[in-house]
Length: 115
Length: 113
Image 1 (cartoon, rainbow over the protein chains, first blue to last red):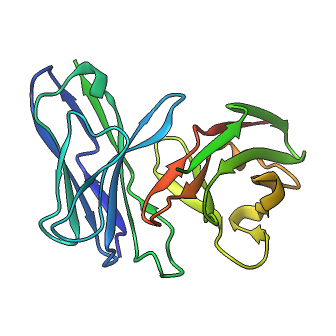
Image 2 (tube, rainbow over the protein chains, first blue to last red; image 1 turned 60 degrees about the vertical axis):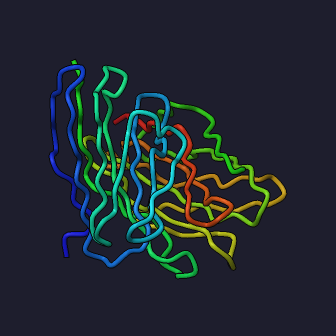
Image 3 (cartoon, helix red, strand yellow; image 1 turned 135 degrees about the vertical axis):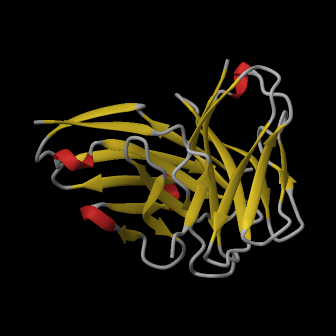
């Protein structure tokens, strides 16, 4: 049982390049989330999904797109990377809200640098 | 809307001293509250959570937190700090729809030998 995994762990991009971050969970969770973590700003929600085939915008969605084609995977895409997107990205998942296990489980993070 | 305020971005305590990390929340509905810990270069790990029932919640590693509705607070405490407690701590509250979580900006805890 690996929990939540993220690939890659590190990446350096040039401005304007694109990339996709992959998040996978093996806990059969309905909800999945993408956050970015910046110094002094805590975690900010980018996009989230409440089930396979659904996505919704969070607090800071601009410049990112997501897809949830399979229940266990949640992809975060940057179409044209900008230096302002340099950050640490965390994926998380959680079970159905009416479950007592409604905490979020986090992946180890992806450290992205945009030059 | 929901929000969380963590007072003090940096807290230093001596080894063996009391740890107190403050969290205040705003919520228009009964909140679900969480404390997470993040060790360097790692993801977030749940310390404890309050959903319903007993307002004093015990978590891992000797931490506990008390939900005080009248004060809209959920402060994290530990009677005696260990060096291994040095980390970043985040308070979070659940969203109105129950599937969004709102995090505070974090408190970095330093433990002085």
